Image 1: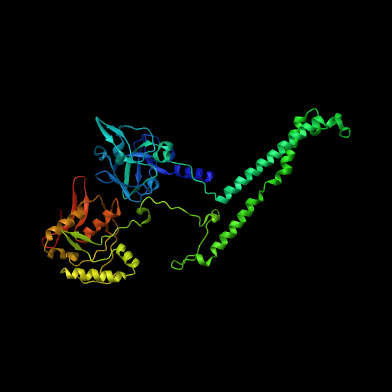
Image 2: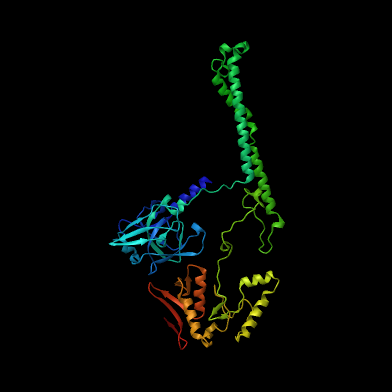
Length: 464
């Protein structure tokens, strides 16, 4: 295990990153050669090689999205923002004359706090956690960022929080180790006592044994040097009594574990018919630990969910819209022994009783291609019908809020021309997608404005 950890560390530290060199150009350099003060360029879906201060990004307002799953287990993206003074440093050529000084706290394991100052020219600007990019986190949804190294190696926050890996030895193996240690202690004790007794007897009794020729004997029985005779006897005793330690017990246990793994693979009762997957033992180390779980600790329900969001229903000015049924309602109906389809029919009748003209369709068929994050069904709002409702101004303001109040970034595919939204969380992505499906499409964002496209008075789209 120790050799595997060293090999993995060597592989990680040999990764490459773009670093600003002495000649003013960015060059490829290994992580292990980074030094504090180096300006690096990290590209999309790459890990940060050290703890960095964000200087600028590919976006005009100097923001980027970071995935910190390796640090805190959270899959939601974190929004990072550079200082306004360094946002203009968004090209490699602009770092030729860049000189600044950073004064910050000493290395510590706190992931969510940071105190420091950036002295750029005659300005002194405060730095906080919003400008820190930690090692082992990944750059997501951003083409590239520029950052300056503040901590490297064991001074990074992830290394400050590193702990020794827990032992994966089973309870039986640990018990076997205790038995072996006990038997080895007995072996050494017996050998030492026997060697001391042999040395004493060699000194006292050997001179009276004429047939051994004590005046002309070898070192093993020399009464003049009983210490050496006892030491040689100790080596002999350790070899002779070595069979007291059952080394073959480990081999026998491993053979039993391999046979147990074969029984697991061939057990028909452990076959899952829905996914057509039988049980498969990838290792035989922990066979004896199966079925012995007594406690499960979970910090929150988010650990057990898929973290997927869909826009299904909404309430505008006290009026409920959306006749779909959520997964929670379906699960509750199944738990109560009811048919989930009856919930959809009852939702349809309820909307019709409120004066809604809705044409319900079977689940999974909406007359249009499904959109990820959008599962809304209500003919009062879809296809531009919201303009015919009694309060179109209120509905329009609601859709504008969905399209404007977020931190998402539009990402247009150069090949297909399709626009996708890169958001900090799936909640925001679902809201922006819903606004687009209602006709209010978020187009772009600058440091001081947000541009959306919405239906005009004559039905033609206009930008605001």
